[in-house]
Image (tube, rainbow, N blue to C red; front, side):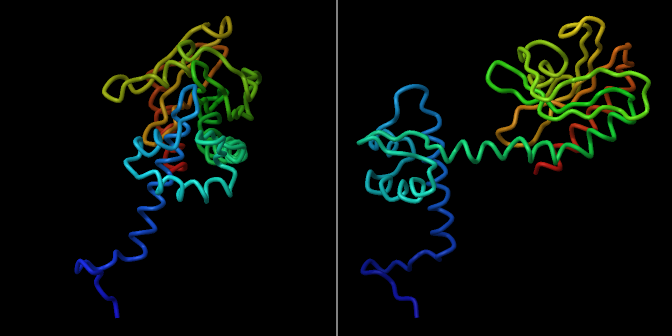
Length: 222
């Protein structure tokens, strides 16, 4: 039998308490990650997530045990466990994107890619080349360029209310043509799906195909 506390209130169900604890723990981890320079203090973290200092100390225990944060006196920094988690992100992105990129590359006859924003740069994290063309662009996984250049980078910054896809000509490589669309609806991910070719692409035809592939990648990641 569940008994009320001295004030007559019934305890919250365990599942709800666990959910609130998880939510606060994630908020705490985010607050540590959002600190731009100086490591935040316990008091600053308590203020950031709307909790008491005692609650912050309790929430830090499981995060520390998993190496996600580390304490330096009253200061808290991200731990190396975050890097271990991050190292598994790109392989999962590649795996999820492969089917859509393969279909896109074979349909258009051009090299297809998934590009992710990393600060002010755009990085190709998955590339699929068409199997039937006589020649095509060789695009290396890990290639980086300014996020404001090339179709892949520009697509990442497209407004949801604006254009669905963007094209570029010779911005990253002379004679290369690109068409790309943003991957939307995946929290925390700024990315695009696109194709690059050595001959001009018909945007009216290729644009919708790229948009569809970007949506398929988003669906695979959700």
